[in-house]
Image (tube, rainbow, N blue to C red):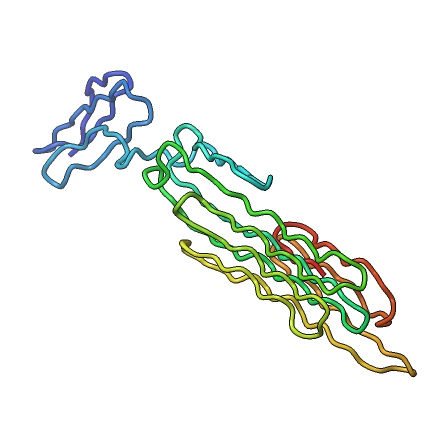
Length: 241
């Protein structure tokens, strides 16, 4: 039907009621409530958005990159958080007169979406350090493995393995992530190998394993009789060369 001359209360919403009547729906004092249907036989009403609603009001990025212990305390009102962790890169081995060291592996990684209930008041962290390279000119010493990174007891990512001293062959294996929605394995260090060229012996030194956030250390070919320092990985989780 057609309605004319109906009195309307300020800020109310007018909807069609039963028997071609008008119904005045009064808003609440709560800001952000929405007009919600209550079925075909009932008038709509203003209600809170189911589940709290409102969407995200902010996105906060937190980075913990100092090796050692730390604590993650959620920002007030945090509903969900995406956590990504990365283990430390492994150190390369040192060489001797007839063989270089092999390259270090990259750290593993893990990534997961957590709710506020999963996190609780806080989570204790362990941030794995990068491993050290083997030390000693002409001395075949292994490097040290990268440290494991822990997000409490919820996720872990082991560090890359250490390179071997004084030998040719494959680089060290990458670390392994666990506990995440996605668990990644760090890149293995590339192979170190030797060849004879122009009457001399040369080597192609292995590159440290790389990650999405760091490039493995790169030491190019050289004479087997030339001593050179290894090369650090660059960025997060990368292995030494």
